[in-house]
Image 1 (cartoon, rainbow, N blue to C red):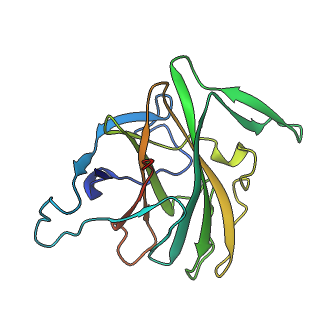
Image 2 (spheres, rainbow, N blue to C red; image 1 turned 120 degrees about the horizontal axis):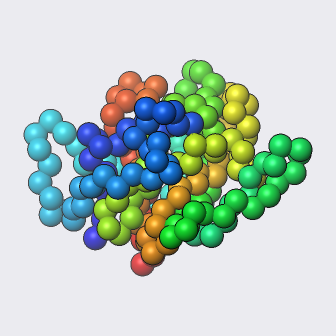
Length: 194
């Protein structure tokens, strides 16, 4: 079974703000659309999202993303404000899902991987719940700080971190490119283990 996120429910998730849908604990539980890729009819004028697996590159409007690893963890290392890092433990009944990815910026402008709004992301779990990245992605160890831009024609690494329920099983990662000619085109990475 392949999990796909409908274009209408995948919204850009930058660093977060008071009016973002993830204001409460950076977690949303909006229903996603789950379909069998070959069996589901596609409404005229709309396309199924392109679906790849971990380790495969997928291009979306000049951005190429390759999810290189997916792991769950009870804690994530974040900047402590004095040049070091401390473990932040997920809230009670939660865990973190960490997606490491390589991003190639093939666009004409620089992008902010940690705090920009160019790449809209969602994690979808086995219960069809959707989750936003944590608000302070720029503080996660290994990530660029906010404002450290990825120049056109270069590549960089990012660790997208999502706080999910303790029993949540990640099934898909979806992203869009808000600066692409088609800012609603969604690409999906199937995270299911075969």
